[in-house]
Length: 337
Image 1: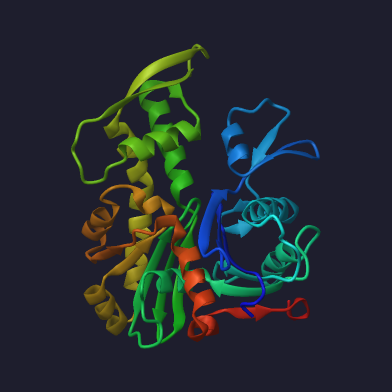
Image 2: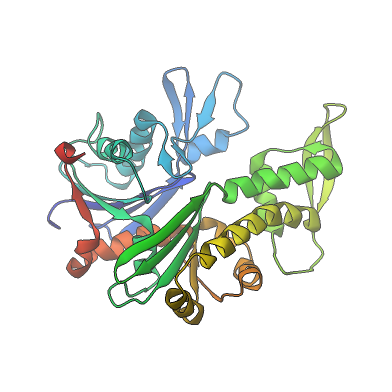
């Protein structure tokens, strides 16, 4: 199998992560497309640079929504464009390992198959790996002899809770709260407190610059937005407390859902998780002290991964490089979908 070109792919709501076996390297690029009518203007990072800046006749959007493929044609174009940058002689007949969300319907699985076997990418063998399994492998969890481990992935648009015991995902839940909702919440708090309208890209920059949970350090940043009353551009100094208030609106929702989820777990598994700690990963876990904040809210300790948004593709890399882990990858054929 490894004589063929082999790739591990994590299609996220915010970015595409690709691992190339032959180059032994992972790549990441924004999962966005800019178009004017039916014409594609820009793909990936170039499209993201146009987000919230493009003229009215140029549409910039993401082919993925809440971890699911929302636009099959655009997703194939975005993936093909990125893979051509990785390998100019892409050809056909590769092995492609996709990380997929839990509880997918046959139609949703078929979308992943056709992304790898559509107009641009053809004759590829497709394997599917459940995303929490890939995350667990990346963080060194022993899936076989396991009395119960909890994996939490806070992504761009959703958060996934999963319990793995004896090699199986026994309980799982996904909620529609992630990094993008944090950005929107920051924009909402600034609009309420300063009467200033800013874009979600600015909200994200403020989150990355000043977002600090459980930290009383005073901080402020100067931003330019649109005055909600006059409609004219205005400069304002934004306090770090306002930014953190926006972040905490979402983090409190995640923590509350997590606490309710933990109460449903059988006592013996909950006891093992309390001793082992909850494994925390995802791009939105870059916020400093988020693990400490969640620990104080739930009463459980957390093992924060330093892989962040690349943990899932790192798990795919481990599966591709280790034959013993191939059992976690399910081969998919069109007639079975």
